[in-house]
Amino acid sequence: MATTATAVPPTVTRESARTAYLRLCAAAFLAYCSYAICRTPLLPLFARDLGADLPLVGLVVGASTLSGVVLKLPAGAWSDVLGRRPLLVAGAIVFAATPFAYLAVSTLTALIVVRAVHGSATAIFGPVASAHISDLAPPAHRGAWLSTYSTIQGAGQALGPIVAGYLIAGGRFDVVFAAAGVLALAVPFITSARSTGASEIPSAPRESRWTEFAHGIGEVGRNRLVLVTSGAQAGLFVLNGALNAFLPLYGREVLGLTAPQLGWLFGLQTITTLASRPIMGRMSDRIGRRGMIIAGLSLSSAAVALVPRAGGLGSLMTVILVYAVGVAVSTAATSAFITDLTRRARYGAAHGVFGTIYDVGDALGPIAAALCTPARVYAQEQPPRLRVGVLPGGRCDRRSFERSRLGRGGCGGRVCAGRTQRRRAPERSHAGPCAGWTRGARDRHHLPRIPTRTASSVSVCGAMPRWVLKTTCGSCSDRSWMDDPGMCSP
Image (cartoon, rainbow, N blue to C red; front, side, top):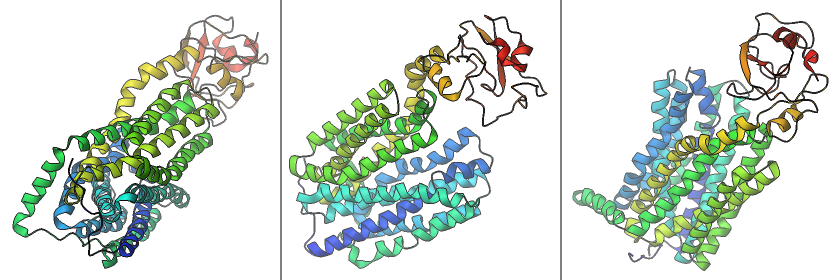
């Protein structure tokens, strides 16, 4: 393992290092809050407004991750050669300028390009900021400094979607993008100030820059502990990406959670991780990093494995909070451990490699979950259990519908166990209890739509806006069923 040089160079006092650290934290909060405003939920809505289908929406959102994979390693390595300041200022300028570029976007191609450019801001700023904090932090407090910075950055990212939601309510996307740009305008000034201490690493002579750049990447690439640690973090981000993509669907479609309940679930997860991370960073300074990384990865993996066993909101929330603590334990120790493993002249390259590898994991998470989930979760949970019970009066309320679709009892009446087939609803509406129900109508008051692949079910009025299920085990005709569900009651 390479020896670690003194964290703060002689030309930077402890007081100036602390001031530089606080300024960098402030810059990160503003930059990442602005970035998050432009991302969720604004970006998918804007893409749909431009006519994007679902695959294109995914491409637009994922363009920034591609930038991270491509640019994090060279950005970090160049900061070892050129100094931290030029790269921090470059990333800050992209943070400040790109939100205004969205105002000129009128096509999906332009949106993808602008999104990729915007993603380059985090790709440049992220690893260089971590390397800069590693320069400034006292070795005995490195974990605390890095984890506190991550918490402040994460707080900005958590606030961004909230601000975006309120601004989007006004009905104008341009106002939201302009507000994000204004918020980030101060970031270049903060990072370029001399008191940031970003100039303490002298730039290498021009003739040797490319050589130093290549040597830095090669040296870090041969450090097996850096690669293994980065790979472990990538594995955690595979879980994280999968959970973020599919937990909402699992909660809604399998457990029957409402949108506010899902919002609280993710909100508490974020709060728990952010609040725990500084504490875990200080613990890693005292008891060591390796044990905490292993403990965090084990805790997170165990929590994800227990998600399919959660039977309701309470148990699922408990599992997710355990997962959030595991993420805080692992991430708080990992970044500082990467710094411990390298010498100061290679901090940038090391954090560039680290960021590139875990970005790959983050991108692979939803893809891996999409390939595994149907066989392991939804194919087992939904079709065998999806049944609709019928009340004596021929109707089924939402709660009893959800209970019956989870296999926890029907609506109080007989449940048809025969096979069903789907049939188009008529063009006109009918008299009786289903009055006003027409083909293709998506009435908000109707119950959730039943997947057409369901083998055992019985239809109730309004349970399926586009299709009416024809039973084969009862004596009720199609027309009488649609006109008066009460005629089919036991």
